[in-house]
Each structure stands twice: as C-alpha cells, then as structure tokens.
Length: 468
Image (tube, rainbow, N blue to C red):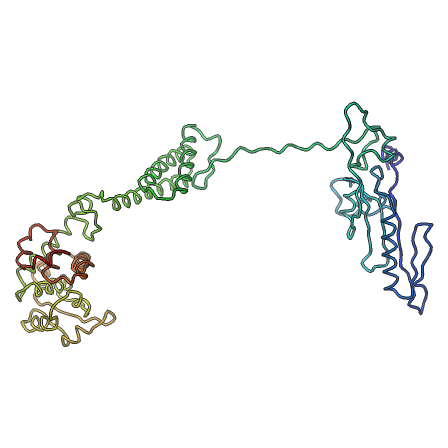
C-alpha cells in the first residue's frame, strides 16, 4: 500500500461490520446455536434450524434498527478484510484500471445462499452494487448547501458527521469538504435536414443547392399533412426534386442520387397526367378524341383509321338488312378480322341487346356468311371456359404471289384493340340502363368518326332512343 493510501486510511474511520451466524449445536441433534460478532450479544440455542433462522433474521434486523445512520467519512469495511473487488487481479485477465470506490456510504446486508450467516457492513454504494446478493438498507445523507458568509466545513467537522459523502476512497484529505462532481453539459447537435430519407450534409456546396433541398424537404412534409390532394402542386414538387437531385448527383458523383432524380421525373409525369385526366385538360392530340377528357383505348390516329376501315367494310358487306344485322356483323367481323376465324361465347351476342339473336344467327349461317361447328343453340349456351370457334369465309386471306391478303391491313395486335374499344362503346352502362336498341348502339360506335355520319343515320334510330 502506498504512502498516500496509508495516510488516507489514517484520516478516515473504518466502516462498521458485524456478522450473525447459524451453526449446529452438536452431532445427533437438530438444535442450532446463533452467534453474533458484537461482544455484547450472547449466544442463543434453538431446537430447529427453521426457528434458528427466524431468530437470526430478527437479531440482524434489531441491530439494523438500533444502528446509527451510515457515516459519510467511513471507508469500505470490505476493503479491510481484502475482498476480491479491492484485491488486484493476478490472473490472465487483468483489469484495465484499479478499483476505485465511489458514491455515498451505505449500510448493506449480505447473506449466503444456504442461509447460514448474515453480515451488515458500511461500504460505498459502488462496492455494494458490485457485491452479489447485497441489499442496501440505509444511505448517508448528502451534504447541506453552505450558507453565505459561513466558512466551509473542515475535516474536524466531518468527524462530527456534518460533511458530505466521500465519492472515492482515494480522495486526499484536504481539510475542506469534497466538492460535488461537475455535471457535463449535454452537447446539442444541430438538427439534421432531410429529404426523401436522405440527410442533407451541412457542408454541401453550393449553398443554393443545400437551401433548395432543405426547402423541398419541408414542402414535401407539409404536403403530407394536407387533408386534400393537389396533384398540380405535387407534380411541381417532383419536377423541382428531379432538378435538385440531378445537380446533387453532379456535385457528389453519386449514382443513387441520379437514379432518385429519374424516379422523381417519372413521378412528376405520371402525376401531371393524372391531374389532366381529372380536370379535363387532355387535348385532342393526346387522346385522338376531339379534346374529350375520357379514357379511350384508341390513342393513335392510325388506330382510328383502322376503325373506320372496319365500319366501311361492314356497311358494304352486311348480307342482311337492318341495324341489328349490321351490329352483329360488326361484332363477328372484329372477332375474325385477321384470319377469318375466331372464338365467340353466348354472352358476346346477349350483350348486344338483339330482339331475336337465335333467328339472326341462323339467317347468317343459312346464307353462308357465317360457319359454325355446331348448332346455334350451342353457340348461345357456350361459356368463356368453352368458347365456340366461328369462321367468316369472306374474311379468310387469299393466297397470291405477294402472300396472303385480306380486306384489312392491321395485324394481330391491332385487332383486339379495335374489338375491345367497340365492346366498350356498345356495352356502355348508360346504353344498358335505358335498354338501347341496336341502332342507338351503332350510332354511339360511329359517333367519333365524322366520315360515317351518313352511315349511322342510315339506320334511322328513334330520336327518343338517342337520349341516354
């Protein structure tokens, strides 16, 4: 032990310690005896271990109630008996620092697992916390704040119990009270600016770019708090984000930022298009439907040309008179337009709203314009899982020197587009609601093709049926 440590132990008082033990009274007997390390306590004998254990616990509790409060100037009683905490490690794993006691002095109670002894001792709170099974029953009082104009308490006053707690058993006796530890001020970090879950560096240059990113992040967060969406505003924010992230990627040469900028451009375009559809701002050039803000399946001028060619062919080659025959021929022509063959189910004919669909199909098969593998009843009863193949001989391509040729010039991908658009028009919800006739459905089909206004009027629909 060093000279400083010896002088320090001389200045401070040793901690109190007493032990209550429970031992067997003799061989061949269940009696036990209780002994206490305090000289004034006499030995007790009890008939059983359970009674002895209860008496020992009551004895140690009586000592704790009668004992004065822990003395702030006392050093650890466990250090006097050389506990493993205070002894230096001699094994392979040594401590990085020597053990230093700390905290206020407490009165702790320790017992073994078998319940054969109980020990009360004065030690620092750090040693009590490091001792397995130790329970703190009392703590020394903190020092009272000094009064203005009154001298600080001295070492002599500390012996009288007026000084504060010792925070280390290595604290040198200076004749004055031990000062309270200085509380380190919490370091306040500047708030981090973020956009799209990315932290904007505080040293990002140019400063204009950093300010733009911070402002965009605040605007996006404010937009998320809105109760009603504003697609035009959101599209503008996405466009600004795309430009800002592109500049950010150029400055830092980070590929992920450039990818994020492309995503923002796509989001801006999609949001802008959605806003135009909602407000009716889509022009005729973008829809091919004279400026109407209605989603159409035909969006290219060439598709409208092919639709007109089908209408012209049906107007010239329908084998039977009347609007119902022409409506059915239009449906069958679009199904078999490419190769002269196609599939049909009963619902396709029932959706046209014909007066007598069975008679009309039989007349088309009777004149040779339509060929079926079975009967008309089988066609009308067929379902999507088992469609009926049909053949229109006049639409089968002819073989010549230049290859197979038919009445239409569009290919395989165009045919379902035209058929789907026709189905959408003639099966519109408003037409079904008023149970529109075939003439009205045909008029709705060709209303977008100004070249065939005369073709539509040739069906002579009832004017009342046009109010849908």
